Figure 1 (cartoon, rainbow, N blue to C red):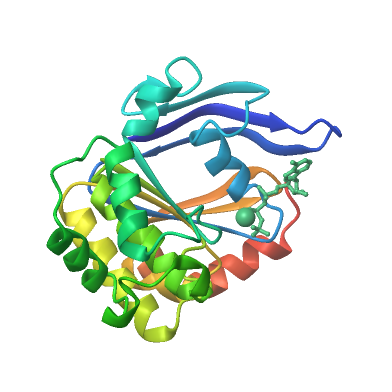
Figure 2 (figure 1 turned 180 degrees about the horizontal axis):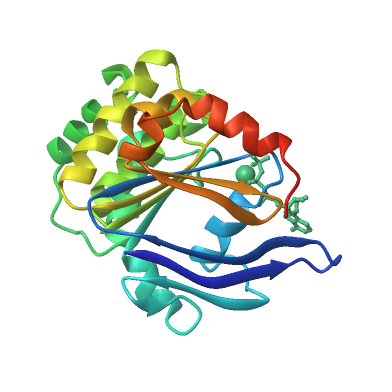
Length: 238
Ligand SMILES: Nc1ncnc2c1ncn2[C@@H]1O[C@H](COP(=O)(O)OP(=O)(O)OP(=O)(O)O)[C@@H](O)[C@H]1O
Ligand SMILES: [Mg+2]
């Protein structure tokens, strides 16, 4: 479970990027966080991953405070972003092996790595190629494969479909649904309303650091999500 309690971030320059966000993403749930550029989505993720410190409030992973127990909480969350940190001089398989061992998984064989790379749709000829020769979308697939191997109970994604070709983006959604059915709590920050409509169990819209809308799948399907989104973007923040 991913949880924020009155989570607030004011950056050093005084900008209030996140204003008392309280949110809970439960096991077996895909939550899409939408919002304009600069709304505070990445800030929320950075706080959950303890990359930055909150001004006030708390972020919890499986009930544990990320500030109090940073190493413990990191074990329970996998992160997939547009700019995944990977080793250019390692092959795709070596990157997977490196991060798997880092996460304490020392029993995996070459075939396990190949299977997960197939699952994320990376082409076979790239499995043993150095990462520095990869395109952006190929790197993202390796990042996703690492997240799957980590098998954490929570998955956090920052715009994971950016850079993926349409087929790969569709495959990512299938993977998300399977992970959700396996009981993972999934937070995805995105601008992709179409994918939100297709797979989200709940959707939140952020505006200027505040959560202005929260709807379950049942609720947002009764209306047009795009229309809802545009309406919220036009209204002034109260
Ligand atoms: N390190 C920083 N220092 C100062 N201000 C920052 C910093 N990082 C982000 N901000 C500001 O905080 C606000 C929220 O940024 P954030 O990156 O969380 O938005 P976002 O919702 O992820 O946007 P996007 O959709 O463009 O990715 C923005 O106004 C941004 O300029
Ligand atoms: Mg962002």
